[in-house]
Length: 365
Image (cartoon, rainbow, N blue to C red):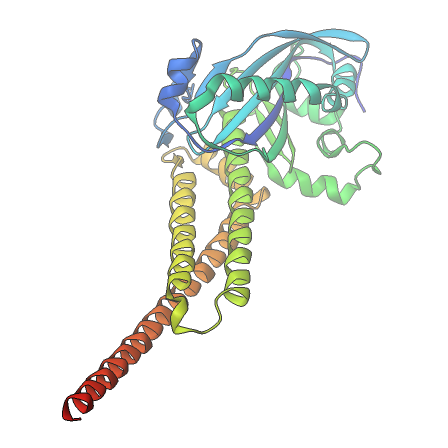
């Protein structure tokens, strides 16, 4: 796959994103953690390319050593806290002037060795952040992503040279124990490739990306992380609305048979349905508005393609459909409450009339 004559410098970025809470108070995170910075876009020419509603907080974690492929590597660790409840942990394995064959071998062996490291780092972060996390989620649903990030190719080598030497399709689509991807699959992958100039390149896949960026800017990896954070939260809330609808439907069937004496139960279910609609509408709007591409066409294309590849819009559509179902359930329950109240009022009026008649008869007698 590789060529022993080509050396590269850069690194491998391994991402694990976790849904840890309903939301995260970033002001409290700043108070608890010493080393942090608010997320920003690095390149000056793209300084107006994005607008952040509430930029995530970047946290520097402890660097450590790791044995990979019988060689010891330094691993830089970082985290990001998103206000809508996501913690992202990033392990960066820097490489310098490494043979492309060695890089490919390393790339295929970076997931399994770090599982325990990610778990320990997540537990430590959740503990350290304490009450900055609001309504902690014990499930800790996660997304994973890997970016092969190249800052420099060997002298006089170009992106075109790399494409001729390295089988990028096999690199990005590699799955341990699976058959190698077909030529058609590799060609389809390259439809998600982008270049701003002759010296840079971005190739996207579902769970990996190759980024060649001589300037050293981390904008593209940051964009891909944002897209994965959006995907994670939409998965979480899609599951949540499913569970809420199941609970509401079950209670309608088993606990709230038609009766004028069960208005209170109707009200409780209606309140739950309305709360589900309100909470999910608020959170999906917050996710959608967390990052806006304003001016730069290139970044907008990469970001939109990542959202398309991750099927973010399909998840949003699914949630919107279920929110509409919850809204219709609320309307149904509200109408049922009105009907039952009318029936109860009519029953009370009949009773009062009956009492009045009885009293009248008693007086006459």
